[in-house]
Amino acid sequence: MLTIGVLGAGHLGKIHIKCLKQIEQINIIGFYDQDPAVAKEVEAEFGIKAFSSIDELIAKVEVVDIVTPTLSHFVCASKAMKSAKHVFIEKPLVTTLEEAKQLIAISNEARVKVQVGHVERFNPAYIAAFPFIQQPLFIETHRLALFNPRGTDVPVILDLMIHDIDIVLSFVKSNIKKISASGVSIVSETPDIANARLEFDNGCVANLTASRISMKNMRKTRIFQHDAYISIDFFKQYTEIIRLKNIIDEDNIGPLDMIIDLGEGKGKKQIFFEKPEIVPINAIKTELETFFNSIENNTETPVNIIDGSKALDIAYKIIEKINIPD
Image (cartoon, rainbow, N blue to C red; front, side, top):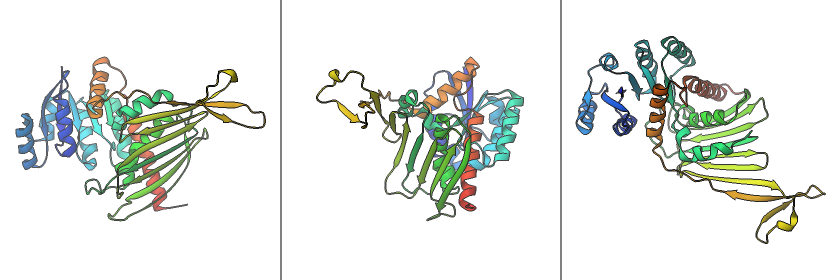
């Protein structure tokens, strides 16, 4: 049984603690939070020990779960890795690309497992859609949220859009050749709404929009590829596939079948609607379980430190384009 400690017991930290207590293969030793009032409250609520320092907690466990503010990710993760502890670290990975580069080097030297908390990879709708994704040609994402002061210390690109950056990179295995972006600040000091266009070497184009000042919540991704359209609703956890297939025998066409005539002797295609089965899961609990499985089985983590670094790299390039447009 793996022993684990949690760094950070804020809103998301509490969710992690709750999930960890439900996972049989691990033993949660305790947590650390710099706010004494929070530490006292969480200790009473969950019945686990509040450690007095980061170093004290790291010394007592095999695995460290980092759910602190992003500014402290590098310090916490580097301390844990240098002590040969496996690390789960919430997104974004760190605050700068230089920190990401150093952390990768430290993790390689320490030979520890690292997983980054890009939780949408474990959304049931994403899991249902993934087998259908084959060489996307165009991807459009919308991640819109009601205003919440939590997270406004960073641009919406790092707060929200980075989820979709990671999703797009998981679909498109090609280098990005061009990035265009725009964004504006409405209620905070950094962009609250932004749009980015990513053009890949293989011809795929991804158009990403993120806003934290919307009137409703929306987390949708649409993927267009040859003879197929895939719609993923991350918020409602719903996936729909629309596929086109060549009609070989017109005698078998039914009266209710949906047919597209391509004209000029190009033949006809039949439209098929599919709704893959959605298996309800707790995405945060599942991502933590897969992390522990990778440790126990000595396999690669599903969202590794390189994945987290790549998403961060693209996020900062988008921010740079907003600040210094072409």
